[in-house]
Amino acid sequence: MKDSPSPTGNIVTSLIFFGVTAAIAIILFIDAFVMWLASLTGSVAVAALITGGFFAVIAAVVYLLAVRSALNYVRDRIETVYEVASRIKEGYDWLSDKFSFLSFLRRSR
Image 1: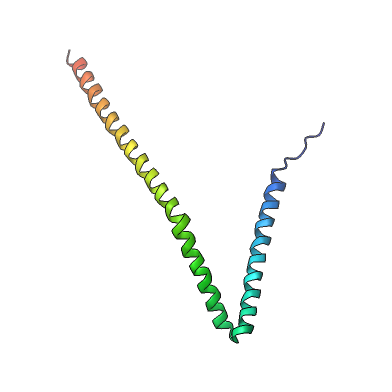
Image 2: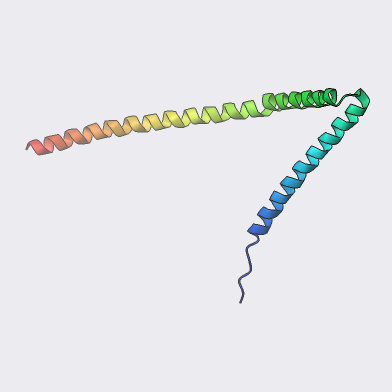
């Protein structure tokens, strides 16, 4: 019996191809929008500034609504991990001191 090839390579290739074509489609859409806006305003520079300002506002809104809360969540989780790690280190140091004291007593006999 022949081993069938793993479909993982096909899936990864398909997802990469989809991502690249979606990015190209978005870039072409934005370019067409800028050219259409330039035909209305009479200036490509003004159309590009308007489009850039629009996307800057969208980026700020996305940051304020989604990214900032996610970053705060990650920061809180990291602080919790740090606190737990410091408590574990304190416990390890305490146990290490006790065992070293016991080994000192054992050697002194």
